[in-house]
Image 1 (cartoon, rainbow, N blue to C red):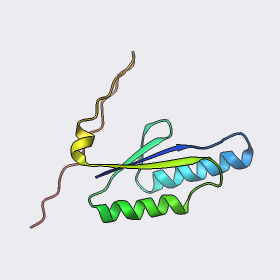
Image 2: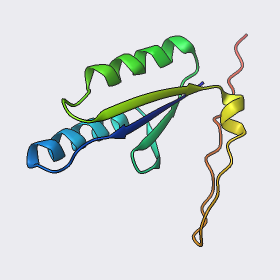
Image 3: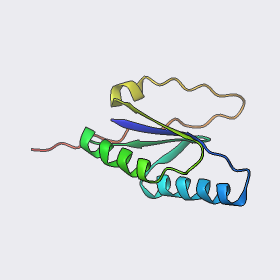
Length: 101
């Protein structure tokens, strides 16, 4: 399961910029990676783990702005189509599945 955190936060004052940096840093510290500006993703091995991260995001919400969370399956993530302009980069690879016995 993949979690996407998409946010639109104001940066018009020093305090708002601090809140933006704090929120973005929290996402990075929790293992999210930037897919696009203000769109961060993280792989979660279970729904319980994704709920943990959703709870952390909710507790770190800045007072201003908007944050949206989207959960998709690994299969849906694999069907993502990525289009580029002149500059092209590699797309993210899903993590290897672990086998439990």
